[in-house]
Length: 336
Image (cartoon, rainbow, N blue to C red; front, side):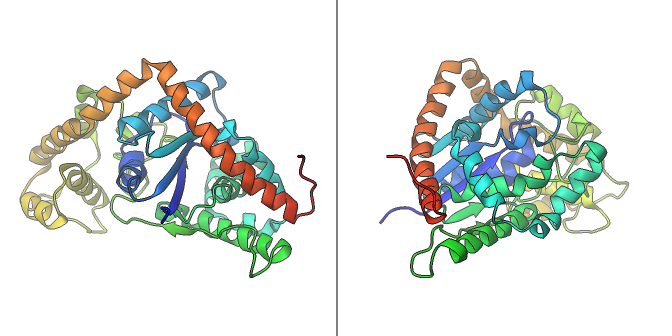
């Protein structure tokens, strides 16, 4: 019996951070033996906001290196670059022509990002959920691992697939597989070190808001020493008035591998002066092998390019098959 397939990706817009690791990549590592995993660098999505063209290619390679450094095995998972497979863009256009405008107007993330960009907001940013639907549906995954904040995009993907199936397929013979979201609560939402009410993000202008997976020990210790806390002694989970406390305890729990109950008991009577060095030391040791492997991989560009070339070949074969099915259903002639 063949494995179920999963698909996910991350934009190569900068260094990946602790939130990317605990919220996504570590889950992918755990899933790669059980599922047929397709993991990509979403470089087409990376240009929906202002970007530095001098950094896009190297950031893309760095994200691939980070995937592998975190434990993704290229022999088990298919690692590829979105823009290396032209079917993503072509299927997105076909989806544009069946997706009602009001479906996109209600997307929460567009509204949030549009406020930041003001008059510079682009059609690409408005339309990127349709491209994301193409990213997913091209590979006919059974499940899409996402955080809670991305669930709306998977629901849109399901709506687009169902609409195309209704218009151009049949109940007995659907054109596209309709995937399910796979939401894993543990570590799904790592918050900023400077504001416990906001998600840790690559786009935050303050580098103190996040710990990058490539940070060295001194940098990590500095960031934890300066991270936002509160004046209350005794550390507890799930107090809505203490978001930073909950976030830092959660990071310690995830990186130390202890249960929530064990951490709650260990830290109940601690002050921040005692807890912060403990968290920093735990974080440094947990991330040390990732950083060391990342540095080795980024010094071997030829190896990374060979991984991406192999991934592209496998991805292209599946994407071409799906795209041909959609085009045939919509009435296009397919070249032989």
